Length: 301
Image (cartoon, rainbow, N blue to C red):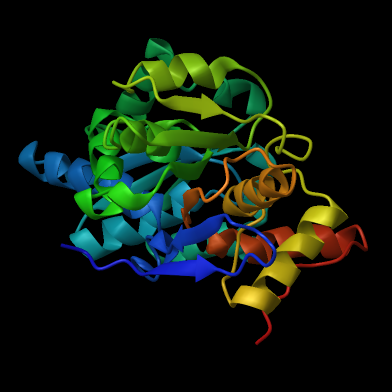
């Protein structure tokens, strides 16, 4: 069984006990929920005698980086269908795409308009005609096998926690957690995207009802950040020596601490935060922030 450290977060003047599960340390390049989501999918791909993994993602996708490295490590060819045809000439300037390319991933750049059709039967058929046989991994990696992997984040030893909190992207991670918690525990998900569509997506996989989405901490939507969030991430690292990514976990941790300060949680609650990784995306985010003359994320001991 994987040994994943859990660290206590100092919460002065509060009866709340706050802990963070360091899933970001599970693997140096396939970190956090990406490791969990790929675990059983890689096993299935080998069972099906597939030699190629094909998936989808944007410019700084954690999923693209993880699939590229996992494919290299496990003997698969990898293909990334990338949102934004303009990125074809920017691979060397993009830390995520450069890393994936160095891992051997082949890219297929499509327009944003075409990318919106990526789940259609016609689009998938076109990919099959272009690349022949492959094992398809959805954007973000969420499918039944991914949910099964994410359910292993929570074990019987976590019975002491009243709340389990995680960031939400495509809904796979929180679905796995929902399926593995006990009846006295509540799962809180913090979406990184605007909109209510995630409720429906999660219900396709989740088997329990003791969960809720907290939609007030997306900071403007997917990939959007504010100076307040960046300052929080930097202060959190200075105080706890734990790096947070600005797209997912950073927003979730900000939200939980803000809710603690607003007395959302009952006194003496024990809360477990799930760090889902994503640190590889910080370099790319800092490039965008520098272009806008905004504060950058700094992990300085």
